[in-house]
Length: 316
Image 1 (cartoon, rainbow, N blue to C red):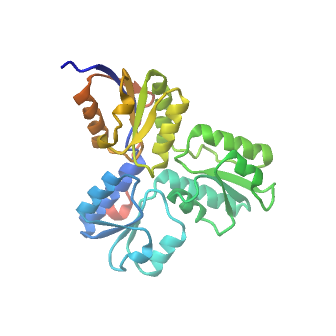
Image 2: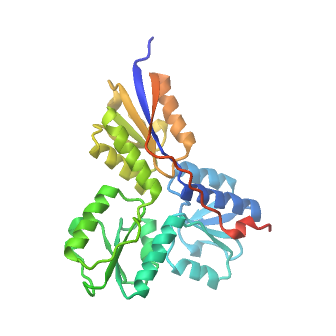
Image 3: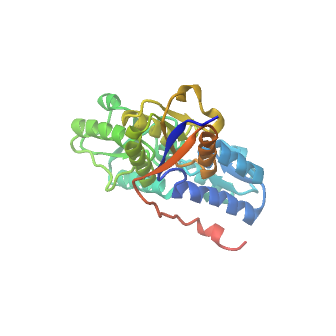
């Protein structure tokens, strides 16, 4: 039986970013240096496959520092943590390693700098997301106000309209953020923005590749976890850019083949915390059913690398 032909567009860049790569390496190096178990506060990155793999190697994932013993190392996730967390670890004399993505740390430093200048912060982000919780937790309660939509901007109550600054969650959609920033600037003309866009290079690059790929495709799949903000944004960006069917899948088993019946082209990309092995699994699933012609849609080349903390580079 002849397989139907299918053009498979593969977005580049896709998958792991430098911050995720560094965070996973930190857990692996901590296990090598100190042995198992090593505790990790919150999922190191939002991907079940990655978390399960590290768990098998001896990482223990917990939600709160209170679940960790004093005598074992603890790692803080790539999304960042409120200041109260390292303070509590220090108070207990714990060994801890901060795996916060350097681009998230940049936003934390920005928030502190604005606060030191007497400005109240407005954060554009998703309520309850670990990165938002971590960034808002850099300053005392009430110093960072959260907005999620342009409509929220109309109702936010500030201390002084002349003394405001804003930061954003790094994994948002550029287009959504632009609407919210415009609303902030319209209501608060004096508001101070970041020197450089807070949305990280990897989020931007993956969204640009999807925008270039989406109009070519009958359907698009984003490999990523349902709790991954940047992966969910890629689905939204694909739909807006003209792809009639855009879906998030964790791995090949999640593909809804009936929904894809009759397609002649598909685009595949992956969120920043999805490993290449899962992307290849999805590609192989299509090759099993179709006569696939692969085409790359490359919009940027990434060569960013972040160093791991010094404590892991030093011998025990």
